[in-house]
Length: 290
View 1 (cartoon, rainbow, N blue to C red):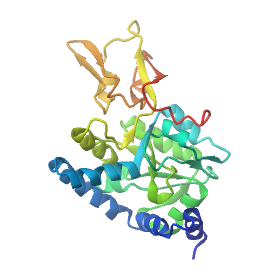
View 2 (cartoon, rainbow, N blue to C red):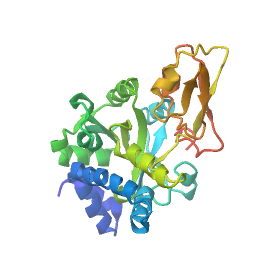
View 3 (cartoon, rainbow, N blue to C red):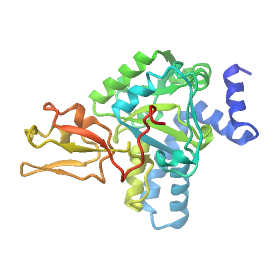
View 4 (cartoon, one colour):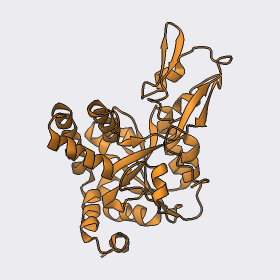
């Protein structure tokens, strides 16, 4: 048994079932996501069928994501010490029932491999290698067992460069949490509604129940400086959540739809937009404050 497999086994303790799920999840990553992708239309069309809705809610509680601002993302990829926070208070940041652990152990150990969402949605080939593992145990497991997904080691600088390039293409950054992988984060991915099963799941979930979501907002909302805004509409064009719109030259902003991803700020030529911590939303995953 490889050391990375032993580390995964040890992480789950007596829950051998979770170890097996975790092991199979990454070995059959692509097939796993394909099944979820096929389930979403079923959930949408049978939204009044209670067993299907129950299964959907169960999935959302056990496999979900936290949107990261670019500022908070940069802190993840500049870590030089372990972060291990296991507390009920984490639910103030990650508002889900089960998978809420914030763990980055030996965070300078990083790997990247193909994203199963992008593969299953036929994304451009140059965009597929985009899932990032942060932490020695997880990154080593990918390197040892996921070569069919083109897993490779990268540095913190390389990881941040990958994220920066995807953000220029309109992708947001998300940290993923899953019960079967120990209930903790460690996987950071570059997501867009056209190619991300998680974001598609959130859209489907909200059609069933507005309170449902597979992605938690970053914890920020935005404010505009009207004196600087020139109504170029760059912010609305890049907003994948439809939170910023222009109608008859008037800017409209829906705070409830805003996930605080920071893309609009990065694309504002006049620096007319700023983030602020929104007390009506879950707290940011800001490692300085965690």
